[in-house]
Length: 408
Image 1: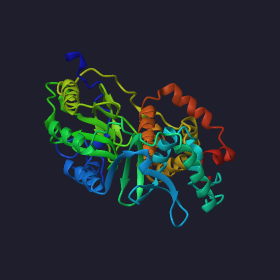
Image 2 (image 1 turned 45 degrees about the vertical axis):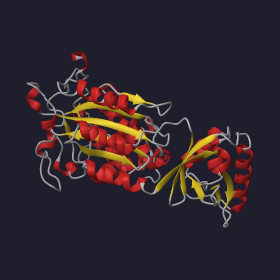
Image 3 (image 1 turned 180 degrees about the vertical axis):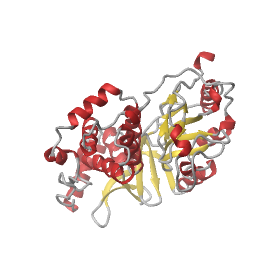
Image 4 (image 1 turned 180 degrees about the horizontal axis):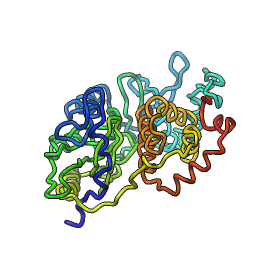
């Protein structure tokens, strides 16, 4: 098993600046952690995370019943919904409507488009959907469900606020988020929940580990930390997943420096999931990789030295956003974060931090995308950076209109 151990290979100076960073709660690292005091203050305990999940779980019901027990209809106000056999009405989220469309071989785009108000490119609504749209949607949905055997069993996730968040087949095998988090607490009792996103249905984020929880041996003066990145969704948005990693430090805005990721455990929610087997798999994966610090790959370092070379930073940010196909709203948020918080760093380091900050303002799936983009930027390399800066020189006002919501 020794060849599976993670070993920190990122250079010691990676993230070392965090040690002297002044923040709102103090300077440098939280005692016993490689995490800035400001970011530590944003982390949660297991109890806090589990309390959040328990509160949402108390507001929901998973209905397992034949298809004939749930029919499409309109409420008294003419709004589309699904009505259960006992008279309760539920309004599907976009995710639930997508699953309904897939199960009935109906266009998911068309179904959801009839429930949302279309927008112009500047974000202004073209018009608002009305009762005629709802009637059209009802006709389409009624036509769709007639193709499904009325006795076929489905699982519907419903909430007391009247929403339906999932339309699943009975073969879907959810892993309870409370069970998952509790198992991780048993394995890593001193951990803290960080970069936490999600709700009672979907969770993903990191469990940060204090210096005392890992046996670092004689390696490298123990100046780095460990964490487990986890994810799970009870309604079909993502697999249950877990992978250990090491990092040099975490900045006050949550940016993770010198991260080395290990072997990932991933399991789809299908068939019979034996929890005891899954429990052992999760534990073995963590224990095999983290305690003695395995082999890994060294990330690209020195991004602070990748400067603007006199090119306007707005041009470079626009080029980076365009290259990574960010939307105009996303690109504008990155630019705003750089202007407000990172403008002293006229380099790739400043852009990376702006991307990290922007991701924290967005929804769950977009936050994951921005987290991945941060990793790509760290690995950008000198030659690609030089090419990016070179192309940025030619950007003008017309280019900005295509990248940002408002040219600033």
